[in-house]
Length: 153
Image 1 (cartoon, rainbow, N blue to C red):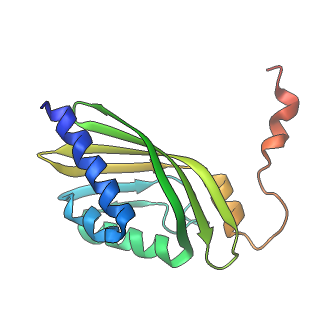
Image 2 (cartoon, helix red, strand yellow; image 1 turned 180 degrees about the vertical axis):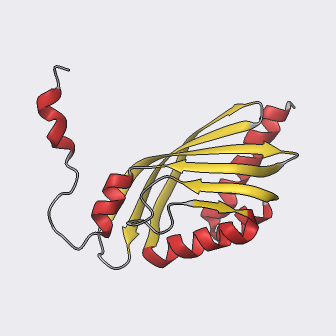
């Protein structure tokens, strides 16, 4: 088995354990001590969306995420590996705990591994929809239809 295949299997196992209820602990077990963990989004509106360093930082990420959001579903559709990188493409649905609003979005998680441990992680999701769901306002803050008139571009 190649190192790429081993990395993909490690990430596949991590998602399986996470979805079966092992939660953040299984993720923490798979981290290198010097891990860099990032979530892309405006931290002023999504407090979990920032850079974290080390296992304690990743614990802080999960605390911030779980304080405001409840995971409804998380389905990994594809894992793509190349050398020390693995990309997970998923469909996810989260509910904002205070507003009760749902966010269903495509998600891409990018991992970099060294010696069977995660040394970098970065997640990409529809942060505009997440900001909207976290807002008390009922108006649409970022409408997909706003670009409908630009179809000829």
